[in-house]
Structures are given as structure tokens and as C-alpha cells.
Length: 69
Image (cartoon, rainbow, N blue to C red; front, side, top):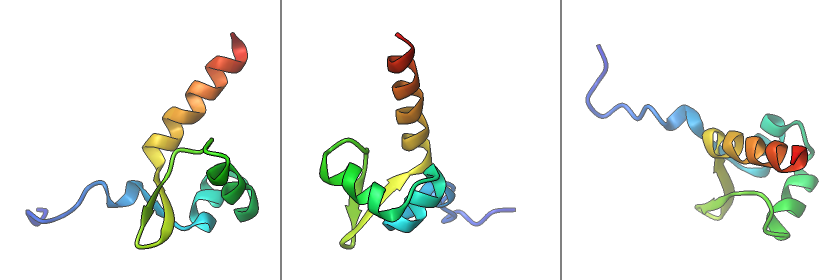
């Protein structure tokens, strides 16, 4: 039984360039560059660059489809 205040999306959240980099198989520096260039979908959470795994997965799928077209 789950508590009513459990956040099921918590596992979807990546906080920090390192976490995003590990998820994407990149370096933190590459993540920061993609963020700076406005390429990588992200948001700031307490001053840290953050993203959702689900958003990054959709973004990767879009990039793959665009490259195949």
C-alpha cells in the first residue's frame, strides 16, 4: 500500500548535469553546452539544471525521427 503523498514522478526527475549526463551517456560538459545552446530540454530546480527522463526520451525520439527524415 502506498501513502497518499507518494510522488510517482520522483524517479523520473534528474537533478544536476551529472545525472542528466549519465542518463544520456554524455559528459557533464556536453550537457552544459547543450543547455547553453538551448538544444536540451531542461529547467532549473533550486539553481541546478534538471530534466525529466520522460522528456529526454521524447526529445531523443524526435531527434532520431528528424535525422531519419
